[in-house]
Amino acid sequence: MESNQILAKYLVERGVNEPKVMPTRDKILKDENLLAMVAGLNLEALKALVQARVDEAREELVMRAHPAEVFVLRQVMLELTAVLDDQASYAEEYTRRQQQKDQPAPEVAPNPEDSSVNQSSA
Image (tube, rainbow, N blue to C red; front, side):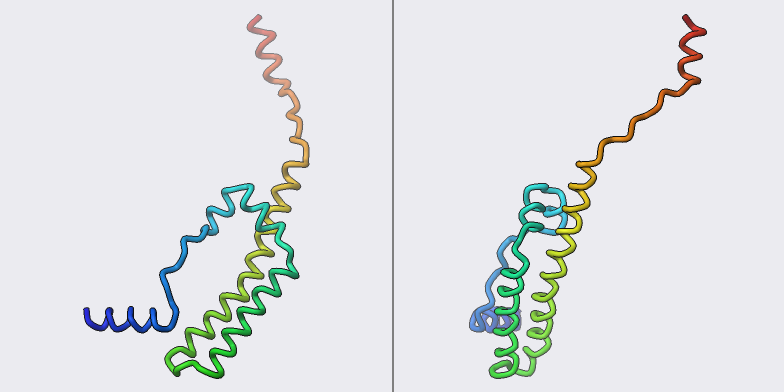
């Protein structure tokens, strides 16, 4: 129990707080408006944001990180760059859904057997 308190104190001192509740992948894919917003993000702006955070993590890694933090900071850098891949996959999904909406539904040809059954029963 005491080790948990020590860890909690350490994390607070390092500036790690409780994570904010963020939308999950499922929520993004189920909510058409949210998916449209994610798909419509300006890619250059998103790259600049991610790069700024990666640069901060890199500086922390090289200049100030304790040896135990190296693995965590490397993982942070990987996760941040994965945001770009996520945005691309959401944009592809949004485009696919829009194309499906724009395509007219195929017409179903009447089944000739159904009309003969209806005629014989009349």
